[in-house]
Image (cartoon, rainbow, N blue to C red; front, top):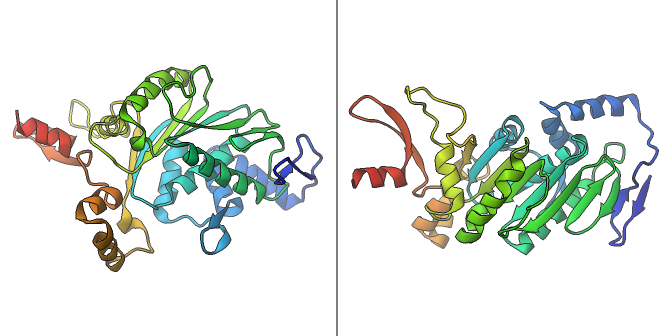
Length: 307
């Protein structure tokens, strides 16, 4: 059963009766799987609004599958990706799946601008509205900056400020373009929000690199310190985050012709930062004269060499 909210958008009425086929039930069970459910949902029931093609079914590139896996497998995930790589699209699909299939969850979207928060919620609403009725959770509240589902979960989108999320019990935090939040605001926000995750909440932080000194870069650097005191590799960084990076060359629709045209438009330095993610935060593995192997950023290496 479907109804319309005040914005005229189709939603599923809370606690409504639903008919299922045997195939529906089998696929619903697949979506509920905590290990593979998110991928199954995105591969089969996640639709996006393409700027030129209109409504299309989401078809992940290989690196987007890896990105989704990093969300699903790790409590804390920090992702550095180039521009227009589909990082927000993948996150939207995961957040919608999480809200509908992990009951009683509070999902906080923290965007660096108000328009960014609105854009993410618009994508979420579109994805929800284009899902088959039998797979959708019913909604009890449906607004431009929040959605509440009849399974007890809710999604809230806010602009990143010093107090965003304070007082909330957050199950899943998603920070979008975190490197572009004003440095003092980002630092205060992270200090404020971290205690709300202490009871088991997850955090996903994504961004294109901006500077070498912002809060995103600090988290990224610590996440890439994945060698212990004995020289063994570790899966997570010193801060418990799992780092993942994807650059333009991993996008199957881009080649050197595209790259050269983009360089001519934005310049070499900006291209390296926004499409190759090369900045002071880029990590390299070095072997010191004493035999110790360590992962460090270009920023840290430059500082060590200047001592």
